[in-house]
Image 1 (cartoon, protein in one colour):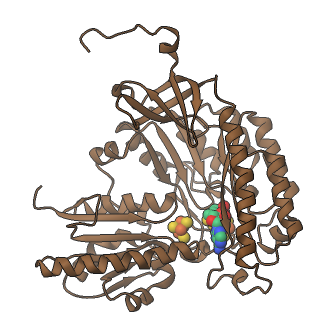
Image 2: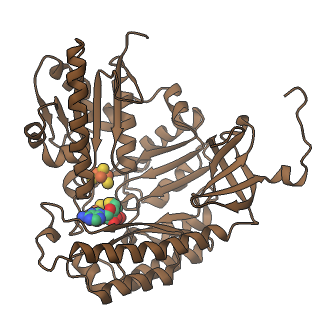
Image 3: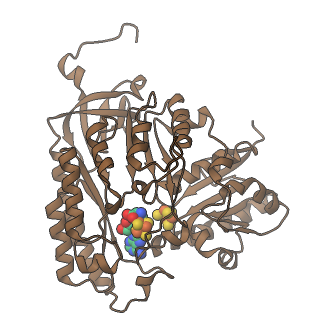
Length: 461
Ligand code: SAH
Ligand code: SF4
Ligand code: F3S
């Protein structure tokens, strides 16, 4: 409808944050809001924020500065532009956001966005609205489902939140405070969401949660199901060719989940398994509750189940008290594991977390030095990992048009982007691709059938 109001939702955070942004748009659609890709001309702008590091939080306030000017311009033209702050900064700072930025009309916590339609109605009548109470109802039961068109627009690979929150309380991390206690969605509710996605054309589902492998949702038999059981259930959904999951905690990698990697062809051979540090002293100070040796043992057991498994991790350098020797332990752990890639961070003290109050903070220049060394090592491993596929054939799920005309881009089982010349009707198919070359972040290849028999031309095509 041409007179529909427009909403722009901007994500600043992790995959769960992106998933939440989509669900906000889904929930506002029945209230008459159409999604738009930019804030220009939008009636409602939602910033879905991240609080994980100081930089992430700072971004929100600089964005609010820009939006304030847009809001003033809109008002000068006689239009109203509402500004909402959602997500983890909203959860952590609540009312404080209204104090720091007068342009904000409503603040909605990370668990409350199913109430957005009602909050917006209140904000429209001029009220400043803040809702950051953790709700008693299950927001997944209240949220509107996306339409088939919305699903199709978002592509053949989708995220589904199956677990939220965290009870682990790593001493550096805000997530237990911004996302609340760990909860898991029941198996059959997740299955119903995945079935709906599959019937609208989705072929790959990534299950997400802050500790996704700590999943313990209610099973069909009324007893809590572990994560492996959820994967086995979803692998049976017709149309779902690929399953992935993220993020995992090493301590929740149980035998059944490890076995699932051997048993389920749909489960992709790629695990993001953050370790943060390779030094036992630091792991303990971080409250990670496992040692370096225990982590390496989990990796070894996973590799025994599925020898080609690729691993990625998160690392923090410069945690308070980290010595040069501790840092060297991290580098040597990376040498032991051989990663396909990793996210690397300089420790950022977060207000309200135990580590922020520790003495012995590492000076910023030293953090930066360690970060660069770590990144160089990871870059070498990532390069070696990608290079090992040149000359091989990989099954690639083609997802969308690539950079060049006639090109499609898809994903390998190991989550590498692969560019290949192929007709658009192959989007949504898993095809064998002969890898010919590698770029910095992409592999290039040719359709394996065409590599063998290049003259299959469709008449009249
Ligand atoms: N639930 C996931 C991680 C969530 S946050 C897990 O447990 O692995 C994503 C990553 O951000 C973390 O793995 C960590 O490496 C990084 N991170 C979290 N808090 C941080 C902080 N205060 N400073 C720097 N990096 C941080
Ligand atoms: Fe944060 Fe640790 Fe929980 Fe991960 S496990 S979300 S790093 S507290
Ligand atoms: Fe950021 Fe919240 Fe995700 S703090 S990383 S958006 S859970």
